[in-house]
Image (cartoon, rainbow, N blue to C red; front, side):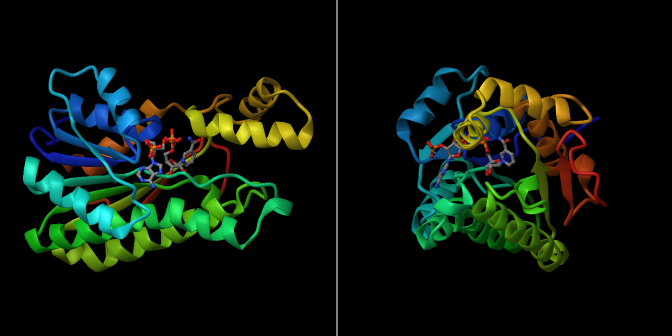
Length: 260
Ligand SMILES: NC(=O)c1ccc[n+]([C@@H]2O[C@H](COP(=O)([O-])OP(=O)(O)OC[C@H]3O[C@@H](n4cnc5c(N)ncnc54)[C@H](OP(=O)(O)O)[C@@H]3O)[C@@H](O)[C@H]2O)c1
């Protein structure tokens, strides 16, 4: 299948690690010209050091909780590579909390870390794509926005809001040639899962390894997903192969949540 991604300009946020890095790599494998962004220069340099493709991505440090940083990022990528054809948002960092540890600061921090870090680049890029009459955006959101987990309420609330925004902006910008879709990963083997296991271990007194084994055993597919599996779906949704898909939220939770 020709995905039509060769030479397309792709910006992946949160791409120094985890799902974002796997997405950046997968787009590069399709011949796209890739830019990656995250807050830490050191994390970006570590990503560049393990980059397997001959052409290195443009790597820009930006804290996307800030609107001005997102605008600067988009300007820098477009100045270096040309108009952005594909935006993948994966720059999330909402922490998990035991319910008793939640306070106003925690709720606000989660919206900054997971909601606004997606909205800021999205807001700039979607309008430019609309002005050019084409583009595709993929938001890596999270199954925690559909099924409430008491240890992930602020992050889950941000995810629920992002699903609504994905559907709503897809409706608004479809007539202008921009497709916007979301992916809801369930537990996916990145550093984020280790963080969640550590909170759960503190609450239950069980070892993280034991919790991981139990968690995987509960799933119909009997294992957590990998960043590379999420990346393959992101590539498909952004590609011409998905040219009639917009406003969709695709669950990738190994069958964990049997809901329609
Ligand atoms: N892994 C899972 O099980 C899972 C499940 C459901 C949903 N998700 C969602 O998928 C997305 C990616 O998760 P992941 O597991 O790949 O996380 P990860 O391994 O922790 O990677 C997160 C990436 O985002 C960057 N980042 C964080 N905050 C940022 C900010 N304010 N501005 C710019 N970059 C920022 C991080 O780099 P720096 O630290 O250098 O900024 C890193 O590159 C997140 O939104 C997460 O909520 C993950």
